[in-house]
Image (tube, rainbow, N blue to C red; front, side, top):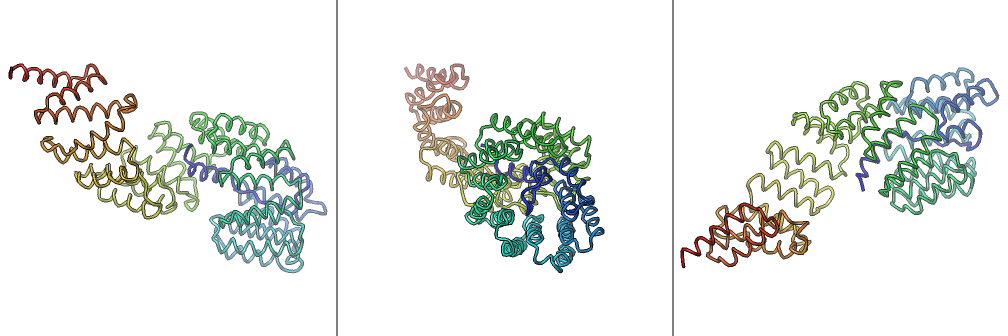
Amino acid sequence: MTNNWKYIVLMAAAFPATAAFAQTGGAGQRAVDLERYEEAKNIYKSQLSGKDADNAYFAMGDIYLKTEKLDSAAYYFNQGIAQNKKSYINYVGLGKVALEKGDKAKAEENFDQALKGRGKKDSYVLTMIGDAYVNAPNATEQEINKGIDYLKKALERDKNNAAANLILGDAYLSLKKGGEAMTNYDRAIQLDDRYAKAYLRRGQLYTSSRNYNEAEEAFKKAIEIDPNYAPAYRDLGELYYFAGQYDRALSTFQKYVDMAEKTPETRAKYASFLFLTKNYEQALKEVDQVLQQEPGNTVMNRLRAYSYLELGKPEKAMEAMNTYLKNVDKNKLIAEDYAYFGKIYSKNNQPKKAIENLEIAIQKDSTNADLYYDLANAYAREQQYDKAIGIYNLKQEKLGASNTDYFHIGNAYMMAGDFKKADETYAKITETNPTYAYGYIWRARAQASQDPETEKGLAKGMYEEFIKQADSEPDKYKKELIEANTYLGYYNYLQGNRDLAIKHYQRVKALDPTNPQAEAALTEINKSTKKKK
């Protein structure tokens, strides 16, 4: 299975969270749920002069928020207030814009305006403030809990508010309280058994916990309720991706693309999915199509740099990375960005910048083991082996030890010339996994390096143990078996054990009939034997 971390951060960046409205019905809301934003705009525009103008202005602004067009969002929220100074819901909208910009004080000021008069008793207003805090960029635990308080107040005002339960589920999920999240999603379904989005959320939660069968059932239920519900096809495709069923994933995701509105956002999502399924050339074609319409699209500029690197074009990746950095708000750079920047700099022979960026990546996401390995390898390439080993040790402190760590640490000691420490490190692998053949070959190399003339035969035992573990699978271990038998042949030759030396060199010949070292050794042994006679 591919790297889940890469999937999560990239997809999260490509698919901004969509808020759930207190009213789960209506043609405009249905269009939003189906991600037909242009259709939804047309519906809400027709309502801007009607009796429900307040909510129409808010809905218009919220659509622009979803597509990260903050100025347009603010325009509609302000227009709503200009038409009605008591438009509590549009003050909520301005608060959401402020949170997107990181201005928490301004957000609270607008939320206070929204809660004046009837606003503090309006379940819809309370729900949307709760949603604003729960889905704020980089929301803190304190902010999420503040959102939960508002959502609970909304439910006190309207116990049948299905959307408030759904957002409450999202809040608990953000706090890693999966059980409470599922309880609220189930409650939303109890209140509205045709609520496709609630089934979507159930599927997403099951996917994150790797309960793929239940997730698939939930997504299919959403599709059964609404066969045109594009997001369910999208997430079902993602589920198949998680399960390693890439062909099925791509075909299902294609249904989402066919069903969703043909917009740069849809193409951006498809490009992201193509990237994740390693269709880098096709992903770039989609990226270029989006960038023709939206040159400053954050996710697509990001994806362009990533794709060029994956295609082995580091110079183009560097050019794309610089373009991305010119367009992106630096506060929105994610850990994966810095990881890719590090790799791009490394491929362009800029090791210092590579290390700087990988260090930032770890600061932003200390839970991803691959980042530690990349950074340690970057230090090792610069022959800073002590720092490389320090990074591996840091990874063990943060995420626990694994045989992969011992392999990398052992290699670092080997490169540093501390063969004794390398052997001690590799020994941890053979101790925990005594049937793992490679562990013995690594130890043998470390021991042989302490005895370069092979006079002491320090590696004899490890090579013999390797052969014992590997000899039944000669095709798999051919190269290493040649190495082990060559060593043992030479050692026994030095010790005068000619029969054993011949046995090992003949084994080398059986594995590689034209092996020049074995041929030369056997010729020499035969010559010396004849001389003695």
